[in-house]
Length: 471
Image (tube, rainbow, N blue to C red; front, side, top):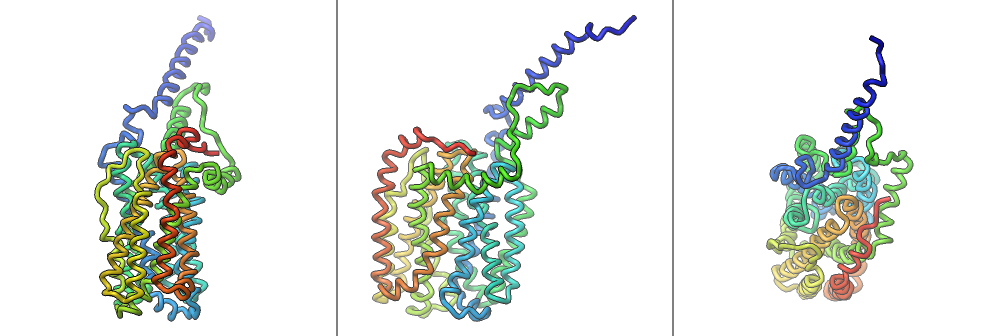
Protein backbone atom coordinates (compact mmCIF):
# COMPACT_ATOMS: atom_id res chain seq x y z
CA UNK A 1 0.00 0.00 0.00
CA UNK A 2 1.40 3.34 -1.03
CA UNK A 3 2.31 5.79 1.69
CA UNK A 4 0.23 8.97 1.45
CA UNK A 5 1.47 11.84 3.63
CA UNK A 6 -1.71 13.78 3.04
CA UNK A 7 -3.68 11.04 4.74
CA UNK A 8 -2.18 11.84 8.14
CA UNK A 9 -1.68 15.57 7.66
CA UNK A 10 -5.03 16.58 9.27
CA UNK A 11 -4.22 14.56 12.41
CA UNK A 12 -0.73 16.11 12.56
CA UNK A 13 -2.18 19.58 12.22
CA UNK A 14 -4.78 18.87 14.88
CA UNK A 15 -2.11 17.57 17.26
CA UNK A 16 0.13 20.54 16.52
CA UNK A 17 -2.76 22.94 17.12
CA UNK A 18 -3.60 21.31 20.45
CA UNK A 19 0.07 21.42 21.46
CA UNK A 20 0.34 25.10 20.57
CA UNK A 21 -2.83 25.88 22.49
CA UNK A 22 -1.63 23.99 25.55
CA UNK A 23 1.82 25.64 25.41
CA UNK A 24 0.28 29.08 25.12
CA UNK A 25 -2.07 28.36 28.02
CA UNK A 26 0.77 27.00 30.17
CA UNK A 27 2.93 30.06 29.50
CA UNK A 28 0.25 32.66 30.02
CA UNK A 29 -1.07 31.01 33.17
CA UNK A 30 2.40 30.89 34.74
CA UNK A 31 1.77 33.95 36.90
CA UNK A 32 -1.71 32.96 38.07
CA UNK A 33 -2.38 32.66 41.79
CA UNK A 34 -2.66 28.87 41.77
CA UNK A 35 0.77 28.28 40.23
CA UNK A 36 3.09 26.79 42.90
CA UNK A 37 6.24 27.69 40.93
CA UNK A 38 5.54 31.44 41.11
CA UNK A 39 7.60 33.04 43.94
CA UNK A 40 4.45 34.51 45.54
CA UNK A 41 3.19 30.95 46.01
CA UNK A 42 6.36 29.34 47.35
CA UNK A 43 6.09 27.66 50.78
CA UNK A 44 6.25 30.12 53.64
CA UNK A 45 9.57 28.78 54.99
CA UNK A 46 11.21 29.12 51.58
CA UNK A 47 10.16 32.75 51.18
CA UNK A 48 11.26 33.68 54.71
CA UNK A 49 14.60 31.92 54.21
CA UNK A 50 15.26 34.29 51.30
CA UNK A 51 14.31 37.34 53.38
CA UNK A 52 16.62 36.28 56.22
CA UNK A 53 19.56 35.54 53.92
CA UNK A 54 19.42 38.85 52.06
CA UNK A 55 18.97 40.70 55.37
CA UNK A 56 22.14 39.12 56.76
CA UNK A 57 24.07 39.91 53.57
CA UNK A 58 22.93 43.53 53.75
CA UNK A 59 23.81 43.69 57.44
CA UNK A 60 27.37 42.48 56.83
CA UNK A 61 28.05 44.82 53.93
CA UNK A 62 26.45 47.77 55.71
CA UNK A 63 28.61 47.24 58.82
CA UNK A 64 31.80 47.80 56.81
CA UNK A 65 31.95 51.62 56.99
CA UNK A 66 30.61 51.86 60.56
CA UNK A 67 33.13 49.32 61.88
CA UNK A 68 35.93 51.63 60.74
CA UNK A 69 34.61 54.70 62.58
CA UNK A 70 36.10 53.82 66.00
CA UNK A 71 39.86 53.63 65.71
CA UNK A 72 40.14 55.61 62.48
CA UNK A 73 43.16 57.34 64.00
CA UNK A 74 44.93 53.97 64.20
CA UNK A 75 44.32 53.33 60.49
CA UNK A 76 45.51 56.84 59.62
CA UNK A 77 48.70 56.41 61.67
CA UNK A 78 49.51 52.94 60.34
CA UNK A 79 49.00 53.94 56.69
CA UNK A 80 50.60 57.39 56.96
CA UNK A 81 47.48 59.47 56.38
CA UNK A 82 48.51 62.93 57.55
CA UNK A 83 45.34 64.84 56.58
CA UNK A 84 42.05 64.52 58.48
CA UNK A 85 40.19 64.97 55.18
CA UNK A 86 42.10 62.05 53.63
CA UNK A 87 41.42 59.80 56.63
CA UNK A 88 37.70 60.67 56.51
CA UNK A 89 37.60 60.09 52.74
CA UNK A 90 39.32 56.72 53.22
CA UNK A 91 36.25 55.59 55.15
CA UNK A 92 33.54 57.33 53.13
CA UNK A 93 34.88 56.02 49.79
CA UNK A 94 33.20 52.75 50.70
CA UNK A 95 29.93 54.67 50.94
CA UNK A 96 30.62 56.25 47.53
CA UNK A 97 30.95 52.73 46.14
CA UNK A 98 27.64 51.81 47.77
CA UNK A 99 26.10 54.77 45.92
CA UNK A 100 27.51 53.93 42.50
CA UNK A 101 27.60 50.12 42.42
CA UNK A 102 23.87 49.36 42.82
CA UNK A 103 23.04 51.91 40.10
CA UNK A 104 24.51 49.39 37.66
CA UNK A 105 24.11 46.07 39.46
CA UNK A 106 20.40 46.46 40.23
CA UNK A 107 19.27 46.89 36.58
CA UNK A 108 21.44 43.91 35.63
CA UNK A 109 19.36 41.79 38.02
CA UNK A 110 16.26 42.77 36.05
CA UNK A 111 17.90 41.47 32.85
CA UNK A 112 19.82 38.41 34.04
CA UNK A 113 18.12 37.53 37.34
CA UNK A 114 18.72 38.27 41.01
CA UNK A 115 20.68 35.15 41.93
CA UNK A 116 23.79 35.55 39.72
CA UNK A 117 24.09 39.23 40.69
CA UNK A 118 23.98 38.40 44.42
CA UNK A 119 26.71 35.77 44.02
CA UNK A 120 28.92 37.94 41.83
CA UNK A 121 28.62 40.95 44.13
CA UNK A 122 29.35 38.93 47.27
CA UNK A 123 32.44 37.36 45.71
CA UNK A 124 33.80 40.78 44.73
CA UNK A 125 32.99 42.16 48.19
CA UNK A 126 34.90 39.41 50.01
CA UNK A 127 37.89 39.62 47.64
CA UNK A 128 38.38 43.36 48.06
CA UNK A 129 37.64 43.37 51.80
CA UNK A 130 40.60 40.97 52.05
CA UNK A 131 42.50 43.57 50.02
CA UNK A 132 41.64 46.14 52.70
CA UNK A 133 43.02 43.87 55.40
CA UNK A 134 46.29 43.54 53.49
CA UNK A 135 46.63 47.20 52.44
CA UNK A 136 50.01 48.84 52.98
CA UNK A 137 49.43 52.32 51.49
CA UNK A 138 46.60 54.88 51.59
CA UNK A 139 46.07 54.46 47.82
CA UNK A 140 45.59 50.70 48.13
CA UNK A 141 43.24 51.08 51.06
CA UNK A 142 41.05 53.68 49.33
CA UNK A 143 40.82 51.78 46.02
CA UNK A 144 39.86 48.56 47.82
CA UNK A 145 37.35 50.48 49.93
CA UNK A 146 35.64 51.89 46.86
CA UNK A 147 35.45 48.60 44.94
CA UNK A 148 34.26 46.61 47.95
CA UNK A 149 31.61 49.31 48.49
CA UNK A 150 30.40 48.99 44.88
CA UNK A 151 29.79 45.29 45.47
CA UNK A 152 28.68 45.66 49.08
CA UNK A 153 25.83 48.01 48.22
CA UNK A 154 24.18 45.41 45.99
CA UNK A 155 22.17 43.51 48.65
CA UNK A 156 20.66 46.80 49.87
CA UNK A 157 19.22 47.59 46.44
CA UNK A 158 18.45 44.04 45.31
CA UNK A 159 16.91 43.13 48.67
CA UNK A 160 13.89 45.32 48.03
CA UNK A 161 13.49 43.83 44.56
CA UNK A 162 13.67 40.30 45.96
CA UNK A 163 11.02 41.12 48.57
CA UNK A 164 8.80 42.50 45.80
CA UNK A 165 9.34 39.22 43.90
CA UNK A 166 8.35 36.87 46.70
CA UNK A 167 5.67 38.74 48.67
CA UNK A 168 2.26 40.21 48.04
CA UNK A 169 1.47 43.74 49.18
CA UNK A 170 -0.17 42.42 52.37
CA UNK A 171 2.90 40.38 53.29
CA UNK A 172 5.44 43.02 52.28
CA UNK A 173 5.47 45.23 55.39
CA UNK A 174 6.47 42.38 57.69
CA UNK A 175 9.15 41.15 55.29
CA UNK A 176 10.51 44.66 54.85
CA UNK A 177 10.65 45.18 58.62
CA UNK A 178 12.86 42.11 58.98
CA UNK A 179 15.01 43.09 56.02
CA UNK A 180 15.43 46.62 57.37
CA UNK A 181 17.30 45.31 60.42
CA UNK A 182 20.32 45.09 58.12
CA UNK A 183 20.62 48.01 55.73
CA UNK A 184 17.96 50.61 56.38
CA UNK A 185 19.04 52.56 59.44
CA UNK A 186 17.98 49.75 61.74
CA UNK A 187 19.87 49.31 64.99
CA UNK A 188 21.90 46.30 63.91
CA UNK A 189 24.25 47.72 61.28
CA UNK A 190 24.66 51.18 62.79
CA UNK A 191 25.25 49.77 66.27
CA UNK A 192 26.97 46.40 65.83
CA UNK A 193 29.51 47.84 63.39
CA UNK A 194 30.97 50.49 65.72
CA UNK A 195 30.70 48.30 68.84
CA UNK A 196 32.54 45.38 67.21
CA UNK A 197 34.95 47.75 65.48
CA UNK A 198 35.82 49.54 68.73
CA UNK A 199 36.73 46.36 70.61
CA UNK A 200 38.56 44.80 67.66
CA UNK A 201 40.64 47.96 67.17
CA UNK A 202 41.88 47.70 70.76
CA UNK A 203 42.18 43.93 71.07
CA UNK A 204 43.34 42.74 67.63
CA UNK A 205 44.14 45.82 65.56
CA UNK A 206 42.23 47.51 62.74
CA UNK A 207 43.05 44.85 60.11
CA UNK A 208 40.96 42.29 61.97
CA UNK A 209 37.87 44.37 61.30
CA UNK A 210 38.23 43.48 57.63
CA UNK A 211 39.21 39.86 58.26
CA UNK A 212 36.02 39.44 60.28
CA UNK A 213 33.92 40.97 57.48
CA UNK A 214 35.62 38.66 54.95
CA UNK A 215 34.91 35.58 57.09
CA UNK A 216 31.27 36.53 57.59
CA UNK A 217 30.83 37.46 53.92
CA UNK A 218 32.37 34.18 52.77
CA UNK A 219 30.31 32.02 55.14
CA UNK A 220 26.98 33.62 54.31
CA UNK A 221 27.89 33.78 50.62
CA UNK A 222 28.11 29.99 50.67
CA UNK A 223 24.83 29.82 52.60
CA UNK A 224 23.22 32.03 49.97
CA UNK A 225 24.43 29.77 47.17
CA UNK A 226 22.77 26.82 48.91
CA UNK A 227 19.49 28.48 49.92
CA UNK A 228 18.72 31.11 47.28
CA UNK A 229 16.80 30.43 44.09
CA UNK A 230 15.93 32.79 41.26
CA UNK A 231 12.98 35.01 42.24
CA UNK A 232 12.50 37.53 39.41
CA UNK A 233 9.13 36.67 37.80
CA UNK A 234 10.13 37.82 34.31
CA UNK A 235 13.33 35.75 34.34
CA UNK A 236 11.33 32.71 35.46
CA UNK A 237 8.76 33.39 32.73
CA UNK A 238 11.54 33.51 30.14
CA UNK A 239 12.89 30.20 31.36
CA UNK A 240 9.38 28.75 31.12
CA UNK A 241 9.12 30.01 27.55
CA UNK A 242 12.48 28.45 26.65
CA UNK A 243 11.40 25.13 28.17
CA UNK A 244 8.12 25.09 26.26
CA UNK A 245 9.86 26.11 23.07
CA UNK A 246 12.34 23.25 23.41
CA UNK A 247 9.77 20.64 24.40
CA UNK A 248 7.28 21.17 21.57
CA UNK A 249 7.61 20.34 17.89
CA UNK A 250 5.79 23.53 16.94
CA UNK A 251 7.60 26.84 16.63
CA UNK A 252 4.44 28.89 16.23
CA UNK A 253 3.55 29.53 19.87
CA UNK A 254 1.45 32.65 19.77
CA UNK A 255 2.87 34.11 23.00
CA UNK A 256 5.38 36.90 22.46
CA UNK A 257 8.90 35.62 23.24
CA UNK A 258 11.21 37.55 25.54
CA UNK A 259 13.14 40.30 23.77
CA UNK A 260 16.79 39.53 23.16
CA UNK A 261 19.17 42.44 23.68
CA UNK A 262 22.78 42.78 22.66
CA UNK A 263 25.40 43.33 25.40
CA UNK A 264 25.73 46.96 24.26
CA UNK A 265 21.99 47.54 24.64
CA UNK A 266 22.01 45.92 28.08
CA UNK A 267 24.94 48.10 29.18
CA UNK A 268 23.15 51.23 27.95
CA UNK A 269 20.01 50.30 29.87
CA UNK A 270 22.03 49.56 33.00
CA UNK A 271 23.62 53.02 32.85
CA UNK A 272 20.53 54.99 31.86
CA UNK A 273 17.49 53.32 33.43
CA UNK A 274 17.98 54.40 37.09
CA UNK A 275 18.71 57.98 36.01
CA UNK A 276 15.59 58.03 33.85
CA UNK A 277 13.56 56.81 36.80
CA UNK A 278 14.83 59.69 38.91
CA UNK A 279 14.15 62.25 36.17
CA UNK A 280 10.74 60.97 35.09
CA UNK A 281 9.26 60.02 38.44
CA UNK A 282 8.46 62.85 40.89
CA UNK A 283 7.59 60.21 43.47
CA UNK A 284 11.06 58.69 43.36
CA UNK A 285 12.84 62.05 43.23
CA UNK A 286 10.98 63.59 46.19
CA UNK A 287 11.37 60.53 48.40
CA UNK A 288 15.04 60.14 47.45
CA UNK A 289 15.85 63.76 48.30
CA UNK A 290 14.04 63.46 51.61
CA UNK A 291 15.81 60.24 52.59
CA UNK A 292 19.12 61.71 51.37
CA UNK A 293 18.84 64.59 53.82
CA UNK A 294 18.08 62.37 56.82
CA UNK A 295 20.74 59.79 55.94
CA UNK A 296 23.37 62.47 55.27
CA UNK A 297 22.66 64.10 58.63
CA UNK A 298 23.21 60.77 60.39
CA UNK A 299 26.59 60.22 58.72
CA UNK A 300 27.60 63.81 59.46
CA UNK A 301 26.66 63.16 63.08
CA UNK A 302 28.98 60.15 63.19
CA UNK A 303 31.97 62.40 62.48
CA UNK A 304 31.40 64.18 65.81
CA UNK A 305 31.26 61.10 68.05
CA UNK A 306 35.02 60.68 68.38
CA UNK A 307 35.58 64.34 69.21
CA UNK A 308 32.66 64.52 71.65
CA UNK A 309 32.89 61.21 73.51
CA UNK A 310 36.63 60.49 73.33
CA UNK A 311 37.75 64.13 73.44
CA UNK A 312 35.25 65.74 75.82
CA UNK A 313 34.05 62.82 77.93
CA UNK A 314 37.28 60.79 77.96
CA UNK A 315 35.86 57.52 76.54
CA UNK A 316 38.36 54.91 75.33
CA UNK A 317 38.23 53.67 71.72
CA UNK A 318 36.46 50.46 72.71
CA UNK A 319 33.92 52.21 74.93
CA UNK A 320 33.27 54.95 72.36
CA UNK A 321 31.87 52.28 70.05
CA UNK A 322 29.12 51.68 72.62
CA UNK A 323 27.91 55.25 72.07
CA UNK A 324 26.24 54.04 68.89
CA UNK A 325 23.89 51.94 71.00
CA UNK A 326 21.86 55.11 71.46
CA UNK A 327 20.82 54.87 67.83
CA UNK A 328 19.67 51.30 68.40
CA UNK A 329 17.65 51.87 71.55
CA UNK A 330 14.83 53.28 69.41
CA UNK A 331 13.58 49.79 68.71
CA UNK A 332 10.90 49.38 66.16
CA UNK A 333 7.40 48.49 67.20
CA UNK A 334 5.52 46.43 64.67
CA UNK A 335 3.88 48.98 62.41
CA UNK A 336 1.19 47.52 60.10
CA UNK A 337 2.04 49.75 57.18
CA UNK A 338 -0.69 49.50 54.60
CA UNK A 339 -0.24 50.40 50.95
CA UNK A 340 0.58 54.11 50.53
CA UNK A 341 0.86 54.77 54.27
CA UNK A 342 4.06 56.56 55.25
CA UNK A 343 4.67 57.93 58.77
CA UNK A 344 7.97 59.58 57.78
CA UNK A 345 6.74 63.20 57.63
CA UNK A 346 5.32 62.91 61.13
CA UNK A 347 8.59 61.53 62.53
CA UNK A 348 11.05 64.07 61.09
CA UNK A 349 10.59 66.45 64.07
CA UNK A 350 12.17 63.69 66.20
CA UNK A 351 15.34 63.99 64.11
CA UNK A 352 15.43 67.76 64.62
CA UNK A 353 14.67 67.53 68.35
CA UNK A 354 17.39 64.92 68.81
CA UNK A 355 19.91 67.12 67.00
CA UNK A 356 19.06 70.09 69.24
CA UNK A 357 19.46 67.99 72.40
CA UNK A 358 22.66 66.29 71.24
CA UNK A 359 24.31 69.49 69.99
CA UNK A 360 23.69 71.78 72.97
CA UNK A 361 24.24 69.20 75.71
CA UNK A 362 27.54 68.23 74.08
CA UNK A 363 28.48 71.91 73.79
CA UNK A 364 27.79 72.55 77.49
CA UNK A 365 29.31 69.19 78.48
CA UNK A 366 26.19 67.95 80.23
CA UNK A 367 26.41 64.37 81.56
CA UNK A 368 27.18 61.98 78.67
CA UNK A 369 23.84 60.18 78.92
CA UNK A 370 21.95 63.28 77.77
CA UNK A 371 23.58 63.63 74.30
CA UNK A 372 23.09 59.88 73.88
CA UNK A 373 19.37 60.39 74.58
CA UNK A 374 19.47 62.91 71.74
CA UNK A 375 20.87 60.22 69.42
CA UNK A 376 18.00 57.92 70.46
CA UNK A 377 15.51 60.46 69.09
CA UNK A 378 17.57 60.90 65.93
CA UNK A 379 17.66 57.13 65.35
CA UNK A 380 13.92 56.79 65.96
CA UNK A 381 13.01 59.58 63.52
CA UNK A 382 15.49 58.41 60.87
CA UNK A 383 14.24 54.85 60.91
CA UNK A 384 10.62 55.90 60.39
CA UNK A 385 11.67 58.02 57.44
CA UNK A 386 14.00 55.59 55.67
CA UNK A 387 12.34 52.18 56.11
CA UNK A 388 8.77 53.17 55.12
CA UNK A 389 10.15 55.18 52.19
CA UNK A 390 11.85 52.04 50.87
CA UNK A 391 8.70 50.00 51.36
CA UNK A 392 6.65 52.64 49.56
CA UNK A 393 9.00 52.56 46.55
CA UNK A 394 8.80 48.77 46.39
CA UNK A 395 5.00 48.96 46.34
CA UNK A 396 4.95 51.66 43.67
CA UNK A 397 7.51 50.18 41.28
CA UNK A 398 6.88 46.47 41.85
CA UNK A 399 9.22 43.64 40.93
CA UNK A 400 9.72 45.00 37.39
CA UNK A 401 11.63 48.12 38.48
CA UNK A 402 11.93 48.07 42.30
CA UNK A 403 15.64 47.21 42.23
CA UNK A 404 16.41 50.06 39.81
CA UNK A 405 14.31 52.51 41.86
CA UNK A 406 16.06 51.52 45.07
CA UNK A 407 19.42 51.72 43.30
CA UNK A 408 18.64 55.29 42.27
CA UNK A 409 17.44 56.10 45.79
CA UNK A 410 20.61 54.62 47.28
CA UNK A 411 22.72 56.60 44.83
CA UNK A 412 21.49 59.95 46.14
CA UNK A 413 21.54 59.08 49.82
CA UNK A 414 24.97 57.47 49.82
CA UNK A 415 26.47 60.25 47.72
CA UNK A 416 25.44 62.64 50.49
CA UNK A 417 26.89 60.23 53.08
CA UNK A 418 30.20 60.24 51.21
CA UNK A 419 30.83 63.95 50.88
CA UNK A 420 28.75 65.58 53.63
CA UNK A 421 30.99 64.21 56.43
CA UNK A 422 33.96 65.92 54.75
CA UNK A 423 32.35 69.26 55.58
CA UNK A 424 31.73 68.23 59.20
CA UNK A 425 35.05 69.20 60.84
CA UNK A 426 35.09 72.66 59.25
CA UNK A 427 31.42 73.31 60.02
CA UNK A 428 31.71 72.32 63.67
CA UNK A 429 34.97 74.23 64.01
CA UNK A 430 33.19 77.36 62.78
CA UNK A 431 29.78 76.93 64.43
CA UNK A 432 30.60 74.61 67.39
CA UNK A 433 28.49 71.56 68.23
CA UNK A 434 25.55 73.58 69.50
CA UNK A 435 24.92 75.80 66.49
CA UNK A 436 26.19 73.21 63.98
CA UNK A 437 23.60 70.63 65.04
CA UNK A 438 20.96 73.34 65.35
CA UNK A 439 21.56 74.18 61.68
CA UNK A 440 21.11 70.52 60.75
CA UNK A 441 17.93 70.35 62.85
CA UNK A 442 16.40 73.30 61.04
CA UNK A 443 17.31 71.74 57.69
CA UNK A 444 15.44 68.59 58.72
CA UNK A 445 12.40 70.65 59.67
CA UNK A 446 12.55 72.62 56.42
CA UNK A 447 11.99 69.43 54.42
CA UNK A 448 8.84 68.42 56.30
CA UNK A 449 6.28 70.38 54.15
CA UNK A 450 7.38 68.72 50.90
CA UNK A 451 6.75 65.12 51.99
CA UNK A 452 3.54 66.19 53.74
CA UNK A 453 2.21 67.54 50.44
CA UNK A 454 3.42 64.43 48.69
CA UNK A 455 1.78 62.26 51.34
CA UNK A 456 -1.51 64.04 50.67
CA UNK A 457 -1.39 64.02 46.86
CA UNK A 458 0.90 61.01 46.31
CA UNK A 459 -1.93 58.65 45.38
CA UNK A 460 -3.02 60.99 42.60
CA UNK A 461 0.53 61.18 41.27
CA UNK A 462 1.04 57.46 41.60
CA UNK A 463 -2.10 56.49 39.72
CA UNK A 464 -1.33 59.00 36.98
CA UNK A 465 2.24 57.99 36.27
CA UNK A 466 2.51 54.55 37.86
CA UNK A 467 5.96 53.20 37.33
CA UNK A 468 8.05 54.37 34.37
CA UNK A 469 8.32 51.30 32.23
CA UNK A 470 11.79 49.78 31.93
CA UNK A 471 13.53 50.66 28.74
